Image 1: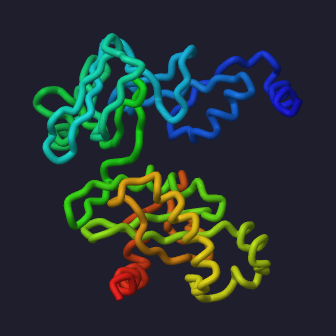
Image 2: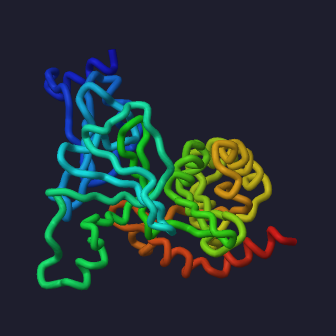
Length: 291
């Protein structure tokens, strides 16, 4: 009944919508799918004219951006060795195919000739074989292309393991206790995080009043709250590889904001800004875990 009323607001005859420009949250796609309205998500860049892949109307795999479009090649390239994990075309599609993550590269008529009067910049993104390097990390999942992170966000731990923070953070964000999370671990032995708890959950479970969130201390030092969040951290860690799991965390009182310069207008974390701003607390977190 509720779904039918929502669908009426769209005019009642809407069958599908196109999504692009930013990642479509999986739960949003599922919600509209349950309404009987399909969202066809696509992926591409200005440099690729722009579409590289798009969801097919008859085949929804939420969390992916669809099948490679005709007459181009899309490859997944190992970040360090630059060896190809796979090269896929529209015709080589296999609905059961899955592969490891790597940088997404593309070659074909859709790729630009280059940046105007910028030969050096062009050489940095188009290699001698004509592959355009998107800077996005992804894989093929059930035949469809899936974007998992940006290459520049990649963390490489002290043992050389690559950790892509976005999918790891999204795993922990399944917890209703966590509103925001920021992963740390580049060149370090293990992963830690800055966690911002859900304000509503703190108010409901611990009876926190508004003045609690207006205190001058940036971080919360409360064993009960720490243990409460740690329950979910341990629970969702089971879904991750051991080197991706959070070993220690600190709890920030209030969310990262655009006004404080910590996130972009599209709500993406400014990693260098956050790591520099909270360097003292981050370093202390690593020292404390070793004690």
